[in-house]
Figure (cartoon, rainbow, N blue to C red):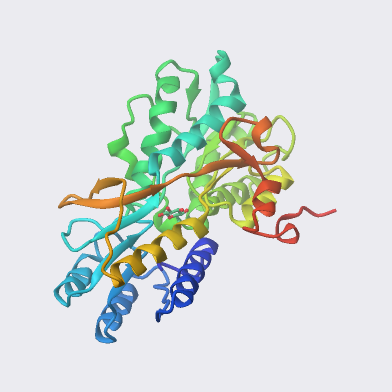
Length: 341
Ligand code: BGC
């Protein structure tokens, strides 16, 4: 897994490892601490230890290429976990969630909250962020969102006071607004600098398209520490999106600082990957439902589904569940997400 520092990869790794062990095989879980060299070393170790399959949540989808090529030479199957491994033939399977749908859910949340679908003309101010420039997923998340939001930029209903995106911004420019390594601190710093264009809060901020809960937390921190006169839960607080249904985001949603997160049930992903591993080890056929291009080959892929999560769920927007639904599913517990009394 790419890092232990983010909540989701711990959940992913633990469920995956435990499912493989429960099926009667041996499994070892390592975290690359967001470092390319560490991940390459982890892969080389697995090769030396005689692994039959290596499952990789890539830190850097391209930089991991040479390491997986060594695995391929040693006859090991390689599964790209959640993030596609790019620019190499040495990937056997890719399992993830429908990538563009994540961005579509986030954009639709903004569209519905601002009433754009009802013909509201604004103009509304929005800040737009994309994920790490070394993660192919980040481009697709943005693509899904931008295809829905760009027309509103074109008609002048949405504007970005920081000037970071304009109507002629394209999906191919996505790395211009990337948050390196998806890190909260980097997002906070970037948002602080964008807030300089908001005249001490006199210019309103209506929405923030954030592709990940950690980035959303950085944005929230920036707003709160920069002394903006905007208060969570009131009309002058922006609608902020996110992804991963992390405990802190669900808590923030309960508190009213973050509006939405996209919930990709990582238990389903990890369980699916464990199932594929067992099929490979038993010599059975692995069923896939799509292919994803990694610049070299079409990688046989499985694409899972996700939903939006807001405080109130379905009554907020379509394709949406509530924080309580996430708790009820056993993905987290009430006490980890409840707001202060
Ligand atoms: C994953 C997201 C996650 C992000 C940051 C992406 O590759 O698909 O679920 O929020 O990385 O870890």
